[in-house]
Length: 213
Ligand code: MG
Image 1 (cartoon, rainbow, N blue to C red):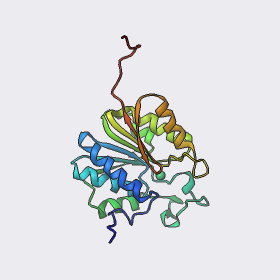
Image 2: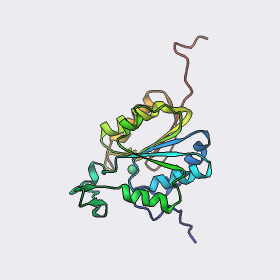
Image 3: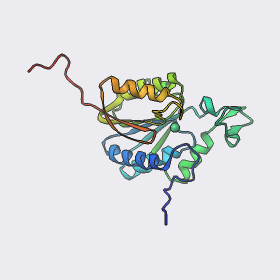
Image 4: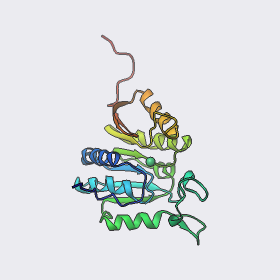
């Protein structure tokens, strides 16, 4: 008999093995400090990470403008009519997201932050144990998300990125370019991927200047 994980029925785009890995990573990181995720959508990853935070007495800050990303707009490939608000005349994923948090009893462990990740991060100062990037998938969006939030990772903190496709025929390349750039910066140790889930561990700060032997 297969045991279904609790997040199975929530709308979202993440394979089961990726979800299981993300949950494990959050369980390991969360005791050290709060977690930030960019891209809440309907709350699938907020439950995957939030249940880990609850178990570890930590907190997840979940950031989204809740207007849907480029590919989720009317007429685009990932448009979902259930998430379109006729009164507002736009996609609005917030009601579904709040419903999900309530359903999984996560209100005490997941803090919704409604706005762009750049604005949410402008005055941020708290060191983070993990950052999960799964917001807009255009290069500028992913790049901005990583530039805004990765500097707040504590040494040993995890930068986890979704939709890293090594094969361009399988998916958009912007997240992979930003992921590669982060590796190239030398600031991270590369951990094994799970399908399209990239995992980087922030190195401890190195002293500047060449090593002297
Ligand atoms: Mg994704």
